[in-house]
Structure formats: C-alpha cells, structure tokens
Length: 502
Image (tube, rainbow, N blue to C red; front, side, top):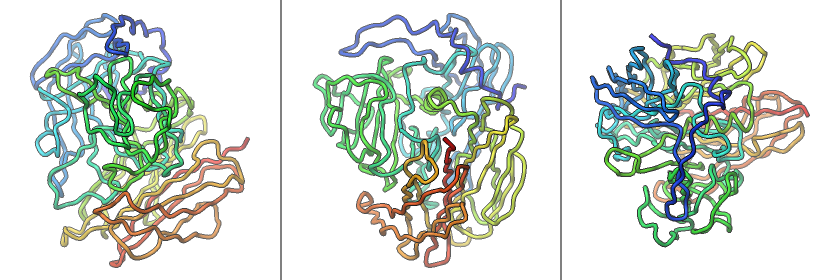
C-alpha cells in the first residue's frame, strides 16, 4: 500500500518533463493550449487506460470510496478513495488541502466524489461518475512554470481559508440546523479589507469586470457582479476573482492582463457572508457533460507560492473541525512539507494550555465555542513554521445555541522588519456584546478593540476593528485575539507573524 502522504519535493524540481504545452488553437481572443494534467472519471469497480500528457499510458482503477460524515449536519469531512495505478494500490483523500500523490509513474488527485452531491447546496462539479481524477506525469509540475502566480500579495495561509470541498464556516460558523451543505469548491484566501492586493494568477482576457461583460461572451460559470472579475486564460479556463473591495481601473472587459498584474484589492462585497477574502474559482467545460465544471485550485496556488517565495517549510493544520461537546476530533499536521530537509517535530499547543508532540492528536472539548489550536513544525535544517486549525464546538444539549465566530487579519504580512507598523483587523459574528482582546505574543500589553455588530441582512456594511502594533525584534510570533459573548462562550483565532532580520 502506498502512503497517502508522500514527499512531493520532486514535483518542483524536474522541469524536464514539461514537454507539453504546445498545440495552440485560437478561441475568440484567447489562445487555448493543453494543460499538463489529464482528467478521468470512474465508477467504483471500473478501470480505464489513460494517456498522460507526455504520451505515457497508465491503467487506473477505482476500487472503493469511503466518506466520513459528522454527526451534527451529516456533512462529509473527508473522502478516502482507494485506487489502483498499473496494479499498485493507494488510498488518497479528496480535496481538503491535500496535494496530488505519486503512485508509480503518475501524480494523481481526486478533487471530488459523487457522495458530495447527496446533501450539497448546489451542483457545480458536473460529475457523471463516482469520482473525478487528475493525472500528471511523475515528477512534472502541476501547471507550467511561468504561467501561474500566487494571486494575493501575502504570506501563505496568512489568515483563515476555505478550500477543496471544505464546508464553509468562517463568517457565521456552521449552522447545525442547516443540513444543506455548501461545500466550498473554490479557494478562499482571507485578508485585510482594502489593503491586500489581488493579482491576476495568469495572463488572459478580461471577459467581465465591474458588472460589465465583453460582447460575444454570454455563458459564464457564475453570476456577474460589480465585485467579480472573470479572466479567461490560455488553457481556456475561466478564473473568477470575487468580493473585491475595488477593481483596478485598467481591468476592463476586452483588455488583456499580464500574469501578476493588479486586479484590485481584497474586500467583502457580494456574497461574502461578511468575511474579507478573495474567492478564487477556476471553471472550464472539460467535463463529460460539456457543462461548466470546477478545477480545484489548491495545488496550483500551492505550487505558485512555493515557486515565488521559496519557503523552506510550510506547516498545514487545516481544514477546520465541527464537533459536539465531548466528541473527539483528530488533528492532523501531516500535510505540512519541508523543502530543504525532513520534518522532525510536530508540536501542538492547545487553548487549554496543554501541549503534545506528534502529527496526529486526539482532542475533546467540554465547552461550546470556537477554538484555534497551534501547530509548530520543525525540520532537520532547523526551519520552523506555524499553522492553526479551527475547532467549532456546539452544545449537544442545546444545538440551536449559536457560538461566536471570529475573523482576524493583518497587513502587511510579507517582509516585516523590526519596528515596522503592522495593522491588525478583527470582526466577530453572532454576538453584539464584549470586546476583542489582542495578545501579540511578544510580551507587550494586550490591546482591546470592539468591532461593529454585524447585521446578517446587510453583512457587507461595517468595518473590521483596527489596531496597529510593531515588533521590536525578529522572530516568529503567534498572535491571538478572542472575544466572549453574553453566555461566556469564547471565540479565539490565531495569526502567525514573521519578523525578519535584514
């Protein structure tokens, strides 16, 4: 059996396997080229011979799909997909911050399984069979170098996020009463309103911006709004950038944009739920039905960030968890990656002050609220990184009782030097009492602010509460912010701030 958490550093190194992007055909004003990955859909018990983009043939079979659902909403929290590749068996996990897995001579992932459609709020995958797979040649990049950049000028996972079929949760929390699940198909990147710069991940043609569309384009994979920009890239993929606070004046229908060009600034407009973030969605009609389907963006934004910023180590503790009081959760840090050595330490620090070592940890919570548990990862070269997993806990005896949900952000997140002013922002949902209390993790006094009450009927109204703080010395700082409601239930969130020694 092949491990579901293999080392993937080779993916970034073997550029010699990029023999692909070649045959170009004209489509309106856009050049369409061939992606590196190929797509296959299979039913359980079915196998197919697949030609990879480098011409190699591979036989893939779908053996089994097992989904794990929670007992609160019956939402799928993970899907374990057993496959065979040229007779070699492996189990991979669908979406949820998981990267493609190397099995034999291919890299493979499973963006979605049919089970998600059983209680999904909407059907947007255009999936005909039991599972969809993407296959890349072994050692190849996910997307051609020089064609995709990280779409926000920001540190990796600098704030909260939603990705790869993770049930949405950030703004109002998950409603236990709502059994119709919004599995988030795009990649959400949280940040600072009007401050974090949104960049075009690819070169391409602007076909919609500020509510206007380019003549000849009347078929879109989603709605047209003033806060939404659609760009068609050379793969024929539609990239959607949503919830913009403002759009750059140069971004107009009919204009071609360069990769990395500014699109606008991050906001909470449109259907954001009141959370400041970029919704990056990628859609295409490369489906068995010819309908719009989703291209899971997570591997592409991961790879783009690694190429641009060359991190030594990335800690990943996500996705979030939804629990009853007294119910056990498994926290998992194995998605973390070192690019210079081996990970030698996983250290967890919990909200109750206890600590533990090891990538996998079991936790239960006796009191409702929103928790944020800290993962510290260290590799064999001495590099350190942090991430956090959010735990939303509801009272089994009073399931209709809401819990406060808190959203933090900071700006800038890149290239902070000692003494630089850093703006911290926060907003709390589901309560109109209490204050947010910041602890900057550097021994300085706590800072107290109060964000405006959020009106559920008009959640775009109002600003996050702001404060400014400077760090006097280089280092890694775990910054915390919390707020309690009228029942004494607390929401706590974390940020990892890196101050560099230039």
